[in-house]
Image (cartoon, rainbow, N blue to C red; front, side, top):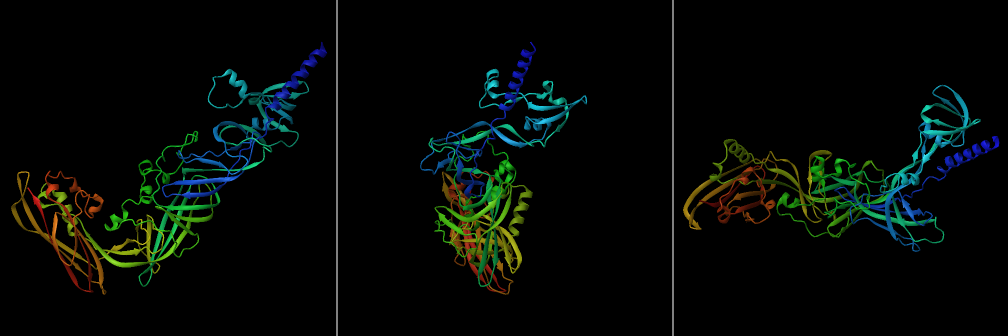
Amino acid sequence: MLLTAMTSRLRFIALVLAAGTASIASAATKLASLPVREVTIFKDGHAFVLHEGEAERDADGNVRLGELPAAVIGTFWPFSTDPNRPLQGVAVGRERITLERTALSVQELLWANIGARVVIRESDERSFAATIVGIPRRTPEELSKTTVRTNGPALSQPGEIILLKTDDGVRAVGISTITDVTFVDPPRQTCEVEELRDVLTLRLPEGPGDGGPSRVGMTYLQKGLRWIPQYRVTLLENGRARVDLQATLLNELVDLDGVTTHLVIGVPTFEFEATLDPLAVNQTLDHLSAYFRKAHEAGVNVNTHFSNAIMLQSQVARMNEYRTQPTTGVAGDSVNPAVGAGDDDLFVFTLEDLTLRRGERMVVSVGSWEVTYEDLYRLKLPFSPPQELRRHFESQRQAELAQLQTQPKVMHVARLKNTSGVPFTTAPALLMEEGRILAQGMMTYTSAGSTVDLDITAAVNVPVAFEDSETGRVPDAVRWQNTNYQRINLEGRIALSNYHDRPIRVEVERMLVGSADEASDEADISRPGWHTDQQNWGAGYGSYWWSYSWPHWWHHLNSISRLRWTIEIPAGERKDLTYTWHYFWG
């Protein structure tokens, strides 16, 4: 009888030992990691990333990766460069993996030291010597039989007791009752814990030598890596200027270590940028900072100011500026890092051996070029509403309009001729001369070979005055749809004075509501027309009075006009520009 009881107890101990050790028999799961080799960064925060490297295969001959990109749909392309093991497919799913972690609790420390000799003290201050047998836990297979099935694997469920072998047998002790543990020998301080991870598996064909390395990789487009350009323009002697470009890099995507980096100028089209690839299980972009969000999402305008958009920047700047054909991308005198080449409507600057950890920011020099520039002055006089329209405005509006018309300003500008061979992109531009700051403005997109204006300051030594006046009315001048309309004739004068001790070159633009008839000094007269892009209408378009409900006949009988002069004014002299125009009113 005693022998039978003792035999049963020994069998129980063996089973407990087996249960305690089986649950920790698996080694820590090994997931491969592929380094980033090359990355192409766009100004809007998207990056095209290339991972490639040697990765160990598992027992099935597959490569399992712990990196799961939140790729834009249609841009995730994995590959294998191993000729003997071409890529068969990719699977993504949640897997139960085992990781080695530092033990931070009594329970984890006990779990990490199965088989160790210890002295246990319980909450009632009693102590006893024991050997750790294990902590019982329900396996995922057991749980799957007793619980509702869910998508993906489950974690094992640890118990709240620990099995301890003493001289009297195996005791089951509540872990919460243990207040102190003394290890006879130095304890192991790391334990293996289970986690659920999204794992990307590159499936390769089975073959001899499975478990060895294969060279694999993947490319994808994802938001989280951005570059913001900045220019410094230094005015030199003899009509020369030095243009320095530096880039601020913001990395919230992936560690870069010695990576070839391409910075792109241009307007890429990512039709599905708001749609993640279905393989991006449980991935979101909510962790990105405001620099990577649209203006309406982030509440800031940093994206709209410095995005890739060329828009109509050049036309807005000078009205006669249009984007030229793409250049061949031949670099000018550049500093390290090197300048890349143009391709279609995109231009690429290449930085070699770039290291930038995720979460870091850095500023890097991109290039420096010498270009030519012209020192000139520019005056833009906006539209004025017809006199008949003004009576519909409240007195405050009339006062604002009068103030606007009586305070025109001539701007001193530097017109850069882009002889660098590379395009200038939309970016803040710091204007310097002889080590002094002159101004900060916005560099707009400028193709190689074209020009861009940078405002320096209001030219107080070039005052301007102008006046418009009515010269007469012709009743019943035109008839349209059985209605007669009168013609209102007007004339205007612009007076510019040069109080500098040198002659100056001035460009003047005057926008008119109506049809221009004549203008002095060989002015260029054009009529954009109501059908043209309103962004081309120049100064004054978009003023509050444009929202007035124009009569139905207005656009049939009237147009808009633009007058342009380019004149030289000698030192100490004044120049008057005159013009006439008309419009029809019912």
